Length: 227
Image 1 (tube, helix red, strand yellow):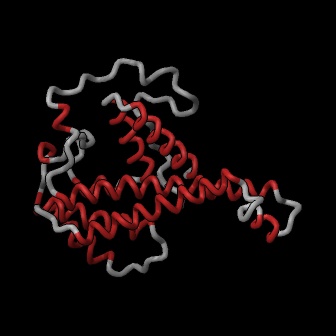
Image 2: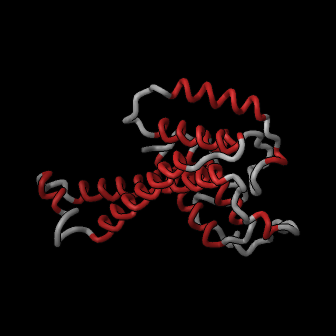
Image 3: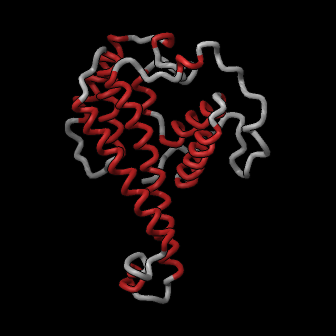
């Protein structure tokens, strides 16, 4: 599944090569109540919806990695029959890297599916949670081309009504929300690469080196697949 965004760049991050040392560069000072910002959103439906969005983007990236590895097997087996090429991804002679990528894709898909089911089972405590639940459904249906159009128009209409009626302002957003963003639903409408870029930059600002590397790698994979 390729991401359609071709223009997103990571703020203050060099993507074409390994950055010199952005993680050791001066970061913005965390606010005094930084510990409070790490707390999950109060609405459980919003929390699980955001968890699903992270898992969904990770699933897209692992799918691309698996497909690239599969293409590599086909290229190396250009003189072999289709059955022989497929056999290289199975059994005792299987490529271990390819098998690891297949397992990663399966694990990420199962994680995202479980969270999607959890969204439906989690009652929202406020209108923002309802917006997040509907936005997650729209995003999944948009990226999953196996689904038919119904009931997307109806859900989009209900979501637009909720976003118009709630009119949630920036200071009502969960901690760490992208600056200037006025809508929770709009976060779910970002391309996967844009979401990864935001997560990478947020991790860098917070001094989360592992998170920064993970989301930067995810961004590069998704951005490369869209070009």
